[in-house]
View 1 (cartoon, helix red, strand yellow):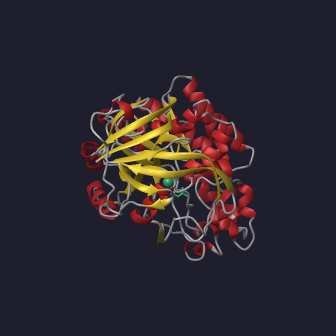
View 2 (cartoon, helix red, strand yellow):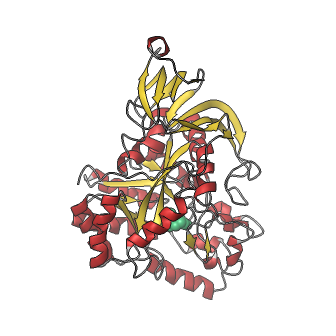
Length: 464
Ligand code: URP
Ligand code: ZN
Ligand code: ZN
């Protein structure tokens, strides 16, 4: 099957010009100006993109689909979650498989492949969450890298659940150096946070806003600083996930200024929502209970600055949806029992186009870089994914920069009963989306197939 996308403005992390894209099978065969006139063989399909932008498919490098957490499961599985992602212009997700205490990572890999295979409508990869670190797991990290799972997430938060102590983190970091893997860090001081939670509950503070008050920015900054120091001692880069606090961003910026290879992502919720949301009536604040929590509104400007000047290199969603009526109610009388996480997989691209490019905060090239190219490079997907170039997967979005829409639970495709952005008007729309050459969203309608997504074997980091 040969498809020609004609007359669109092609935007990658570095390019911006009007041209055509020729797709042969699953990959891009050629990119150029007026390709149509030079083709020797006819194409099977032509997509007219004139007046539209043609960008690489988005890569969401932080999702939790069908994830067991806090007494329930995140409510988007690999079918609903990836269909919603496709509608939002994301053509590849990197989800988190979870190693269980006492069990090998292979068991987690089998479980997560079982969740994804035959269901995902777009391509997917896995990071591996390590709940502990020991000799067996140290060895198995190498096997995982050979399998294409080249990054491991460790938690400085959630004692008794995901928490790994500094020695374990340091050991995993040293091992990551040997095998060219990346350590992703959930940087919050969980031991101190648990003390604050206990004190708040003892004082009778049970409402959702205490979730934020017991996870102060300094707890994130301290853990971020510690993670960086541990990585520096292990002589490896580190990737800080879901960075939310200005104080943590300062730590990243300072380290980068000293030449330490620290990378970090933030998420749309930290760019567009704030701790004011915890005040929503009728337990509405529970919709925004996630970790790290939403911060003061002023933080948003710091995060945008970090994105613009490259102290932050990626925008992911940390999509981890729990329904308001069912899941979030688990914490009606105790904020610490509210399942942590919020939906967002569908609106990352439009929210950040609208709030970033349309609002004049970042360029269109930088937007593509933050939402696709840079995550592809950091996580070993580039140049297969993250750009439009001969040989790369034909994961492409035809983006209408002018079309406006209103985000709502009534129109979204995620399997969750609320939107964190209900009623927000956004400019920009992912009109047509291709995944490895196949149209999966056609003029806003799903045209793909659950199960057509493939596991992507990721590469080791270049610095290994
Ligand atoms: O609240 C969150 N972020 N839930 C998902 C798990 C995690 O820590 O990323
Ligand atoms: Zn986390
Ligand atoms: Zn997460």
